[in-house]
Amino acid sequence: MKVFLMHREKDFDPKQPLPWNEGDLIQDLGMNPLLDAMGGEDPFLENVSKSALLGSLSNDPETILFRQETLKDCLRNREAVRAMYDLSLETIEKEKKTAWWGISKHPSSVLWRGSEATRIFLDALKKLRFLAEEHEPDFQSEGLRRFVEMLKLELDDSFFSAAESHLENLQFKEGLRISARLSRANKAADYTLQKPRRERKDWWGWLLGNQEPQYTIRIHERDESGLKALEEIKDRGINLVANALAQSADHILGFFVQLRVELGFFLAALNLYDRAREIGLPLAFPAVRPASEHRRSFEGLRDIGLALRLKETVVGNDLRVDSKDLVFITGANQGGKSTFLRSIGLSQLMMQSGLWVPAEQFAASTCDGLFTHYKREEDPTQVSGKLDEELSRMSSIIDRLTPSPLILFNESFASTNEREESEIASQITSALLESGARIFYVTHLHEFQNDFFEKKKENVLFLRAERLGDGTRTFKLIEGEPLKTSFAKDLYEKTFGEN
Amino acid sequence: MRRILDLATPESLVVLNEIFSSTTTRDAIMLCRKIMAKVSELDLLGVWVTFIEELASFSEKTVSMKSSIASDNPLQRTFKITREPAGGPAYALLLARKHRLTYIQIKERLSR
Image (cartoon, rainbow over all chains, first blue to last red; front, side, top):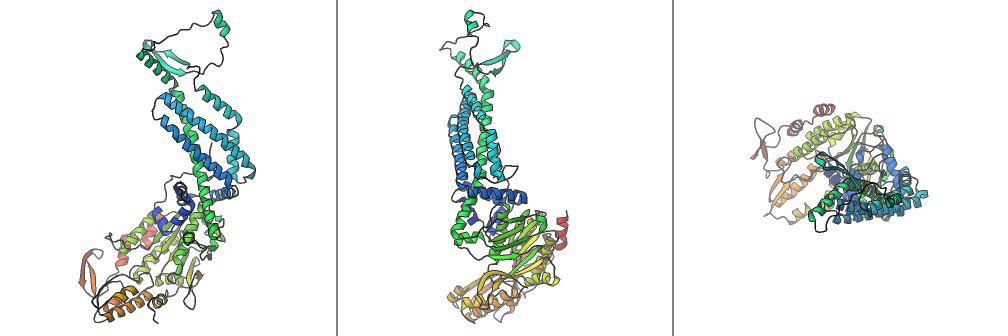
């Protein structure tokens, strides 16, 4: 039995190793409001969301579309999804309680716990099949349809009756039948549990005395060592079956745990959907393109972190950068450059994990690695200088660069002398670009941009944070060649009140 | 900055560390000059860590100090600040080379 709602042919692993730059991504992209919204105060859902988002870079377009379909289905059938999630959670909790009885490794307590757990699971599986059948006509996605098919096929009536009769037998109401053989020195060996006898068909023969010889040993009730020996024989006999039952119970538990994880992801997505709807934020399913196509175009893309934090729809941006690999973002301070950069990174992760993106329309190629290189506030405990630290972080990115990465730079290498920094930034960016990276670069380094501007390369685009004639910032980014000033003068005049 | 300047008196000590580094060099120079003029007018004592070399010779009240490097290794800092005119070798590029981040070095690293 497999859940397979997030991947077509494999389990989603919520404990998968996350990218090495997990911490940087969460901080630089401002991911926490997104994770909070998806978790909705449930740390479990938040964790699954985090793992699904940050672990999404290995997803191919096919997996993303498969997940989008399941998500659409979940949105149409939220009660069913919620009910299945609650059932799996409740089942896991119930099973946990049997642990009180199973602390001992003694075969009879292992057997007891296994039977108890199996009873809980059979009950839950019945309910699950019922739920699935009830909602079968509503499901349209490949993932949920396959899931229901599997439940119907594997959990048919004969499965339940067989399982229940096994459980009944394992109570050993009629006593245990154990066989053994004689080994060296006439010691009994290979204690094996035998199937209980259903009926005594030969009772007539038994009455008449032509039965096989039977030997009975009675142990006196005060014969402690005798009783102990009998107990040992019994344990050896049931040891194998107790372990088999425990294993099968673990297997079914694994199924419910997996079901909770995968449905949890979709519930977290629905949490996000509700929050976005409250704010009035548009959500669109992205058109996913393969990494090789180098495409990205969108209308009204928002920084979801900002929108969730401010509880506003915030300003969206339009962009069409199909076949552009390097996008410079420059212009007014506090004009929305960093917000734009975050929206690029967050939308990439959201798309790749199969979610909506906060935009009116969105299409993009996948990437197999997401890297951020942001200016950091100087760490007072740090001995090395700012540039040294920035270069060292850049070097770790180069060490782990993937074939089709997306790299976001925010004011990198802008800490010292502009001429030298432009030169460094230029060399690094050129080398990355030629290796197949797609880059968004927020920078004030004029000479750096000019270097690329004068080369008139086809795959480079310049965006500027818009500033109206009166100095007002619209938080929109428009195309245009780099300017020499980022309007610090406006800010200065506003702050100091002089002209 | 404005708050500092509002509160500062000729008796104050003002310490500035690489401020306005998030804007273009041109803007940073413009802003720094304006702040420098205000500070100068207040006639207070100030220390300003900056990469904008022009500031070190702003007026006759300005003293230029430099964090020095070892004479035999330009990447080796001595952590000594001495009275010297601003300017020096292309430290940043040397640093980039140390981290194997020049164009040629990155191409080599990525081709492996």
